[in-house]
Amino acid sequence: MLDVHPPEHAPHGVRDFFLHIFTITVGLLIALGLESLVEWRHHVHLGHQAAETMRRELEANRKDLAEALGHVPEEQRNLKDLLQFSKQKEKGTATNLSSIRMGMSIATLHDASWQTASATGALSYIPYEEAERFAAAYTLQKQFLEVQNGALQPAIALEALLGTEDPNSMEAGHAREVSAGIRTMMASIETQREIGHDLDKVYDEALREQ
Image (cartoon, rainbow, N blue to C red):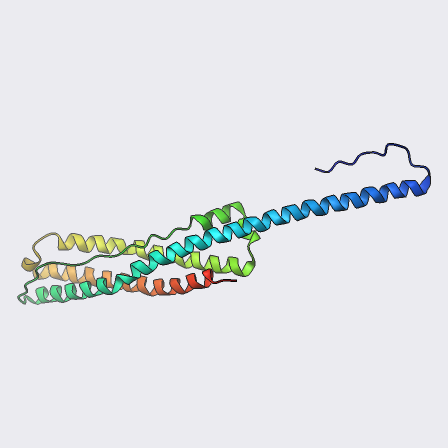
């Protein structure tokens, strides 16, 4: 808050009056300039802090994503073997399956920093191009999580089908259900893999140095 104090003595003539007005004006301009500079520096600090927090969050997310994607080839091989087994059971071919291996790695990707920056308005203090890269990363990350969560249902359903009886005594009708569940699971994992690889590239863009 700026305070303007009246002169201690009445101005003597027009010259003194305008000199006093000029002095007040210059003082106000300096004070406003300093206040704006302090506020600008505060906004810059908020922007840098928000950007750094999001970088750390995305870096952690990228590592978690890489770990989950690293398990995909094994998951796909297990499902392929399981599909071959179920097809044999559909045809009534003799099989000797000792164990069933299937699973799906879950990537835990966070967006708390992005949500906080959006809610507090700190995003507006980040350079536009940088904020745009962050937005792209978090948008695609959300899409990946939606696909991942959607894949949980067929995974649970498939696990329930496989757990109803001894795999080696599985009847043809049951085997057809299992085959359908496996194909759904394989499609879900492949979709995750594709989006995950795209997301990894977008992470790289968001995290690259300015």
